[in-house]
Image 1 (tube, one colour):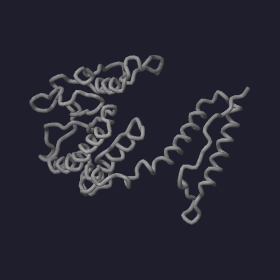
Image 2 (image 1 turned 90 degrees about the horizontal axis):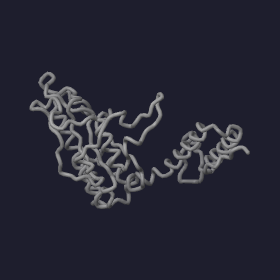
Image 3 (image 1 turned 180 degrees about the vertical axis):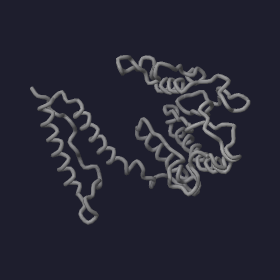
Image 4 (image 1 turned 45 degrees about the vertical axis):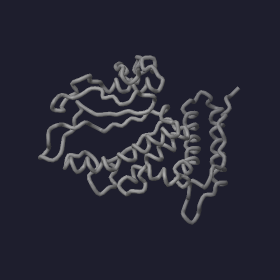
Length: 270
């Protein structure tokens, strides 16, 4: 017997998502009719080609996207958050409000079961000052960025802990590069791939540790150096996965998410 598509039919999830023109909105009923008709056509195709796993995967991804669109408005609605929470994230101060909103959204997503959330700061192209490499005036640049992110990050950690979510949530902060001890035109610093600072919190990590150090010039990691593979192995370990057993076949050999390297950092996973 041919396979039958068992995908979920679309149901109303709120306001219409798609507008054809501002003066001619697509109603929820119209949108659902079109989507269910599409699901029926997909079902016919799967009956003809029951082994087409790529079609099944694409259908599932579209359905997931639709459900996510329906849930997103509630997840990013701050109207029910208290003034105390808003202040905790720095939403009451212009300099911290933009990144504070990102951190509050992150907490709300984690609270609703989202398993991976990534926040970006800087390099967004929508600020009127240097937000990227700090090759110019590093003191002014880093002072500005520290003021923007310090309070929201602290507020997010405090809020996750208040809600009992910090023990089961790994929070990792990492910049794009470390910084050279060498100045560029006396103002900035060049990229440094040989020494970087990363901090972690939550996930029952034993906090208050400083692991490793650079040489006296801040040029290379000298004391207890760890590779990016070690970091990835550590993250997977904290998520309950053994990176040596989590493999996939690629180009004829079993590969790991840490390539073929890496060991969990003992001070973090012990």
